[in-house]
Every structure is written in C-alpha cells, then in structure tokens.
Length: 529
Image (tube, rainbow, N blue to C red; front, side, top):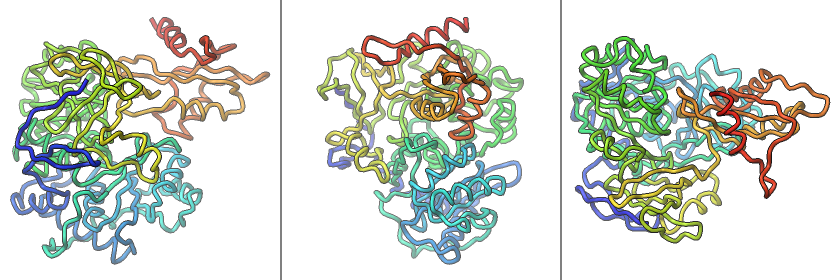
C-alpha cells in the first residue's frame, strides 16, 4: 500500500534520485538557522540552566570562537572528525554547531559506554581528536590506543568549546545543504553499530516540521532529556527552538522528580521524552495542573506507551496535549505523528505521515500490499540520511529507488493511519535505548562459562522492554548471573546488561533448528506473573 500525505507550503525537490516535497520557508543549514536566530532574537535566552543563561548572541559568538579554535589551535581541517564525550550541556551543543561552522564532522560518544565500545566508534569514525570530561579520559585513552589514535589526541574538553568568544563573521560562507555535519551511531556499542550521516537539509526539514506541527514560538521552552548529540537532543529540540526563537533546558539528572523540578523552575512548555520516563511523571508530587501551568505538550516515541499512562496523564495534567511520534534516526524526523485529538479514535496507531513524507508497505518481493495487509514500511522524503558512513553495502541495501526500508512491519488502514506490528530487525528497546540481541549474545558467548545463549526482550512496565538471557553452561562450569551482567555492562553498555539470566540445560528449537525465542519469552513472562 502506498500513501501520499497532504501539501502545506511545499515545493518539489529531488533526493536520492527520487521526487520529494520539502518545506519552502526554512533555514537551509544549521549555520543559517543560528545566523537567523542571532539577528532576530539577539538577547533572548537560547540555552538555560541553573548555572547560567546563554543568549542567541552568546551562543553564536561561542560557536564562532570554538570553530576558529578547533582549526587554528588544534589543527583540525575541513572533513576531519571531532569526537566529543560530555554530559548534556552548553559545551556539547556548541561543539555540534562549531563543527558545522568549521566544516568538521561531529561524532557524539555516549558517556555510558565501555572502553571497548568507544574503541570501535573511534576507529570506525576515524576521529582525529577527542574532547571529554576528566572522568572519562582514562577509559577513552585506552580506547584510543586500541583504535590507533595517539593518546595525546584525547584531551580534556574544558576551555576548548566554550572558552573563546569571537564576533560572528558575515563573510564566512554557509555549508552546503547536503553536507554531512555529524554522524549518529545507531546503538553506540560494538561493530554492529551503523554510523548515520546527518545532513543540514534533513535536520532543518525536521526542525521546520516540529515548529509547524506544534506551533512553537519564542514563548516556548523545552527540557532536553536526550543527549544533544542524539537525534531528539539537537535535531528535534534545539534546532526547532532556534528556528522559532525559543529556548532549551539541558537535563542531566533523569530522575523523574528532578525533571519535574526543572520544568517548574524554568517554566518548561514542552517535552520530547521516552514513554517509559513520561509514564513515571504523574507519580511525582508537583507534576500536573496547577503546579505546572506552562507545560502544554509532551511528544513521545521510540516505543509504545504503557497501558493506562495516557489516562493518568489526562487525569493529573488536563492541560497537557500529547503526540505519539514515530521515526528512525535515519529519517531525522518523526515521519508519522498521532496527535492528541486522534488518540481516542485510533488507539495503537502511530498516526499518519507528515506533509513531507510518502509511505509504502511492501511484501518480501518489494510489491505493494493491499490496504489493511501487513508489509514492511518504506518511507521517502527530504529528511532521509544520504546513507551510512563507511558502509556502502548497508547504504545500498537500505534504499530502493529512493525509498528507505525501515525494517518495521506495519499495516495502514483506509484513512492512512499506520499501525506498527513488529520489528523486522531483532532489536530490544530498553528505556528508549536500542539493544541488539545479537550483540549481547556474541558478548555472552565469549564468556568461558557460557556454551550457548539466547537473548530476547520481555515486557517491562517502566522501560517497555527488559533484556533477558537464557544460558547453557559450559560443561563443569557454574554460571554466575551477576558476573554475566557485569561482563555485558563492561563490554557493551549498562543498559544492555540482562536483567534476567536463566540457566537451562538446553535451548528450545523449532523444526528448522533455530532457537525458539517465542517459547522462551512466553516462559519468562509466565514466570513473572
């Protein structure tokens, strides 16, 4: 089934060799967006924290100073990769725009990864310089040695990103719309992670949609609970804020009570948040009406909302409007949205395509399926990534005639509403973080006490899914579940460590010889009842 969306101030364009529609009136690049913002709202707050307020002028001058410092003092050249490992805050936001200004490519490193995972990312990205906070320097230097990067190219970030201010220069040309200014790794763990190329075009088309869809204005302020280097941090929060004259509040403490406190202190008007975290907010004293009268909108996505949460939100915060947003890192934007007024009529749907998105549902042979029938969801639009960095084979496999293969199985009803049925890829979503079961299986299989292993996701009321592992022990060995969790945490990431570890004599298999994960999942779910 093929779905075309409506038209709203759109012009014809071409992307991936295919005809697309794009918004006519938006800034073409991140640099144009910042330049426009500093001219329109020079003294308005852009980045707000408990410690300081950074205006549009301040931010622009910090970006100019950082860009020149990276080139003039740290020896970086256009096309070089800058890796940054910092908690959310002003420094990492400046780093993204400074890379765009200087023609560099920004690579964000999660502070939660183990050195082995950092090593892969540094080697794959070909980072020429790493800036980090002191706590992560030892591990990053070990990772750098493994990746073949001189340890002296891993330095403390202090002073290198926000330590120099320069007057904004009007004579510096803006980058090309299709230039890659950053890469975002899909899982940020091991060799299976893909580096998604982010372009100015895709990011600005995403920002323009958020401004229009949610009516963003200079009066709006968003609390950023995602890392700035990730999609929802800068693409769909900081960029729309900058485009509309609003401001952002970086959040480093993700306890629900701390988020509510920040919303109250800084008069936050909207959130972009994972469902598992949003589900916990109604339990916090001080959330809702009339304690948070400014909070008008919560956008969530990445996994389905837990049962009953929407009703609890409506009960305690009747002023809050909701939006279920469905997209992928490769699409830059949530290309399907289910808005507040549609939720009662279309439960379980992720909504209809946004004005710049076209959708198709296809069978295994790439043929369109009938209305209501399941098929793999393909999407087309100006927001799509040009491909995966240093992976031509994966890039070619992800597209067919300009259509991106999402890997999700869905159906589309007669009104154009999309229902995601399953993930074609074997992936677990843990509190908004993506965990690939094959990665965890490979990690556990390398442990001396493990002969066989199957990893799967099971339902979890707070984080949507929990990681579970069924293990067959090596003959004569005794499996210690705590040791296996530590083994995964130290080699992949803390969120990938299995919550449940079950030792079994043998793994069940289906008639084709494959491990029957459905049976294992049902066994564990029954056990938890």
